[in-house]
Image (tube, rainbow, N blue to C red):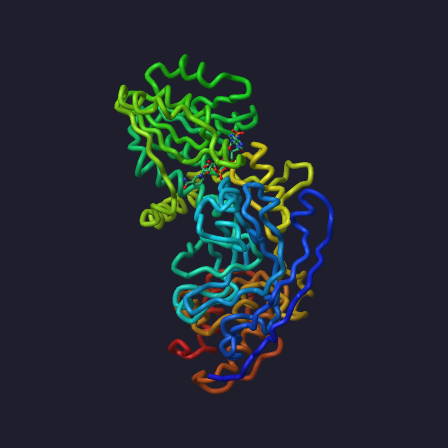
Length: 505
Ligand SMILES: NC(=O)c1ccc[n+]([C@@H]2O[C@H](COP(=O)([O-])OP(=O)(O)OC[C@H]3O[C@@H](n4cnc5c(N)ncnc54)[C@H](OP(=O)(O)O)[C@@H]3O)[C@@H](O)[C@H]2O)c1
């Protein structure tokens, strides 16, 4: 293995990103950012595992950093330009395509999760994207180009490094899969572990039309329950109806206590409660005998300095005892042992069309779709204005995707088709794909150029067995655009001949 040293000098980058008031002030600040030496020192290794050489990964990126503790997200968080991180041996470098907004983003920026943490620290809990670089150990399970999703810190960035063991493989980098990571998993696990749902029981979901509420409604219906859900508009009520919710309650036009008194005389068997304050009080007062109230959150207080609105806690022991009822807290990170099973089951339901995963990308907002890290601020405001329908998601533009240069021409390093990805991928991962019968699809308009690049790349690998092969120019493959089984077989056999019979090491 080559020991060529790639050293990027330590340098100070001074960035003036604009000025203005309000959001603009928060987002566009000036920063001195110390750019450390990049730790990739072996060029041959970096060529195999990251495509810096093809320059499709830039050396710097945008990310959101909590620089001051505050529940006011705009005050707490600022946009910075930093070096793209390098994955460790067991890590993936993921190019984020969609990142999820969570109500607790402002609890996190206020330092309420871990009071020992001091700024600066990264923001964002979840993302979906593509693998663009990886460590050697991580390459046993993943390859460049894989679509992945993750629930771990630092997702409000163009690129995130995450441990491979925490990654969920998804069919495509689509926002619907993002909805499952925190919002779906919370509803799935909380109702399963703490809900003890039984057919015919009455379930109340608060903030029912939001990220996690939409899943709680659907899982409670799947369990055969009668479901009520609170929301703040008729549009949301209509959405809840479409999910199967038996009784949407628009609390802006109806009195929640009155609805519960009139329509639930037997009380609520289970409550999936996310709002807190007076809503918490109202549902506690409506608990059935042996009713279970799961505390999912208390969003009504998050924007206050204490993070909480008062509840009638003094009377709680009496109310619970009189009905043998219980209040149960749920926090997703405490249930990670259940996470894999929950994700697998939800992905199956999602792929099978059995689960609605509603995404709110901000298309209906006056400023339009949430695109780019700058719009995370707008997306948080959208949620806290109670305007979102479904999971709030921000799209990060695909900076790599440049328009194809035309059939058979152009530079394959500027292309993101699968063959171009192969041209830059690690040899073990290409080998594994061939072994598992997963040759590249052929929709790229300049597929020949991309396959030629892959061919040259693989033909030049040291240790490749077999005679040296001329590089056909242009490479001719029969009907590569037809995507038939026989074409796939032809491509597979073509690639099989290019690489050694055992994984390259
Ligand atoms: N425990 C856990 O592990 C866990 C994990 C994920 C989420 N959560 C909790 O689940 C809840 C929902 O979170 P999410 O991220 O899925 O958000 P979301 O439901 O997508 O959005 C928040 C919704 O809360 C409702 N809301 C009610 N009162 C509000 C108020 N005073 N201010 C702002 N919004 C209010 C709004 O809907 P309406 O206008 O229709 O009422 C708003 O759309 C939060 O309490 C969050 O902390 C907990």
